[in-house]
Image (cartoon, rainbow, N blue to C red; front, side):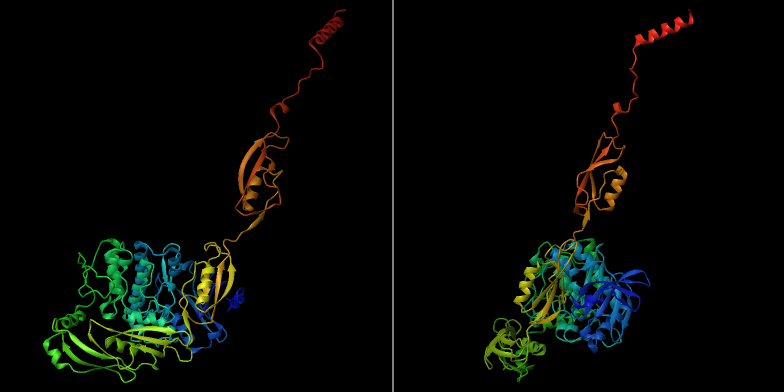
Length: 600
């Protein structure tokens, strides 16, 4: 039993009666509750006891309430009340009867274009409202999007949102968002703005339509590095049925540089609405497409430009001024970032065929250094392609310490800058092993348990009835998906026991009228089966017999009971009796006697 189940039945501040636990994350537990004052069902999000006195966690908790209270939009979850006391800190929110978009995708796989466009439109409307209020969500992902039964979307969890004119809540590394969806500027620690949410939504669109994440790896650090520098497989290469216009929207949203993305949620929304009205629409994109693993064809139709034109002019200029003859004479040495002395680029010469820059790069001494994002960017800018693998055995060094490198320090390689790279393989210490918990809902718990144990996590199991999740499948996990765990941490899996079976007792119907019997069966959640009518000495329309014996236990709404009902007595049994005690001759004799007496 989860310790937070002890809250069930209690009343917070003489107003919110806790009904049941409905979710749990790394920081908070969510309960369904009844607002005694307003007479409505609400959700109560309670900060966990173990972090209730951590200033950063409390700041993040309060940050969410501030962010949402600034907004009022049908696609953003509402907050009704906040209580931050020493012993209990909670937020009262709108109760949503639905599932996360992530759970829905896990169950269904890739979504149809119509669904993806519909959900993206609603998320963009929520973001447009938030951004106009100066609120940047910073953690847009399917886990933070709730899907209602009527198809309506609600964006939730503004815990790490950036607020206008206020200190942004921070909760350590988790505050940057979930690595699978964060923008390159978030992954590298650079300043962010509303366009960071645009990138994250582009990743969500990619996942909705392809059923896959654009970047995936064994460690959060690797995924974060991929967000900054790696190529992704074009959506139409995975599923050619995805419209070209949709792929273009994803491409622009996921550009590495913020100035090359959509400049606002409203601009992206205008493209989405055009595709919604005409799935064959394509867009004119002025600058080259970002690198992907297939060559994109120029769209046949030109409708919309993206990004400010002034922001694109430097790119064009750079394209035509990159290799003039004078560059080979004037460039000499370029100093770039390096923790152990830096990397020296030298010996610029021109390639005889195409006036290309050939440089000699020297591998720096990295063993013993901690691999940081700044160092990685410096290596990348200097012509190295960093390939990272982790040593699971050596735990003596802190996380991301370089244990070995290839090529060795001092090795020189000649490359064409901008077209060639040198593979630099680094073996890093994992330190305390970390695991990003993936979404395991609506999955066979036996497979989930094997997967988690392979990653060094422990599992505990809880069971409860659920009308929607099949027997033996995971309803939810605690902590929730996206949380970073250490090896040896415990994950609590709540597993479905299937639909709750209700047993009812068969009533004794004999002797009741037909109407009474039907009413009693309905109340007992038992269906009326075939009704036959027979002659009987029992009163008309009275139940004579029933197909199931009284007091048997049966599953509610699973059986039918046949009834035999009386039609009353047979007709011949109800006719008036005839007196046959004297014959006609006797009558004649009686008449003779009477006449005789009258006429002597």
